[in-house]
Length: 265
Image (cartoon, rainbow, N blue to C red; front, side):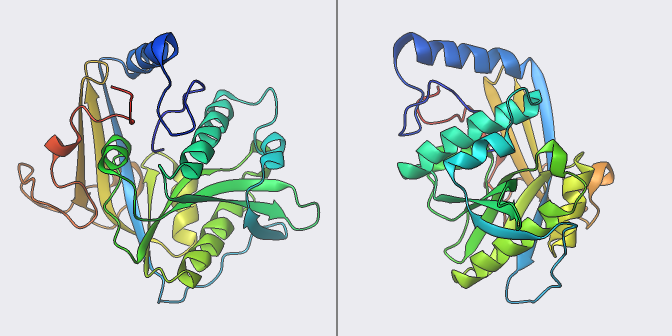
């Protein structure tokens, strides 16, 4: 996801003032630990090329997110991942409303009951460098868009709803004049990797994010992908010291050092 959520965040996407901001910073830094690495697979689809629509195992329809979808998506007493995602949704809604993130939130709903069974964001170009660096996001052209923060509640997993949602959101992006759609999926998330491939996206890059010393130093690296996904994914053969710009990414590891949300550091 682009940022860690902060309940204290102001609507403009910053973290607030005084002790609330300081506590948020300290909690975020401690949670990072001394070192961590996160590898994601970059996917793409050229929207001018038609693909077969994947079918979910329940009748579904795509619509805009509504605040009354929150109880269905993130029920009280849900798992820790759902709680984190709920906070992030609230932050993103505020950030989008204030122009910090050029994103639109969609849900896939059960066609019979209209109950939300999947949530996902479509982000366009226009976010600033601070957002791009802290989220390790690619530079998007005017005719490109990116899928972000997909989440399926526990009761709807295994029903093919994510693949259906990705396809339907891709069609929305195409109707908006977008030519290319990209997405990043954690390399160890087998279900989501399978879902985006079912929706017609193909692997194109590998993104490696590293942080050191409780987030004091951060790096991000984008490399071409050989076409393999999952934990066996490997960058295409190249000199590992090569930090030249690549199509999907930040121009060098140094660009992402000490990056954080606006007002976070």
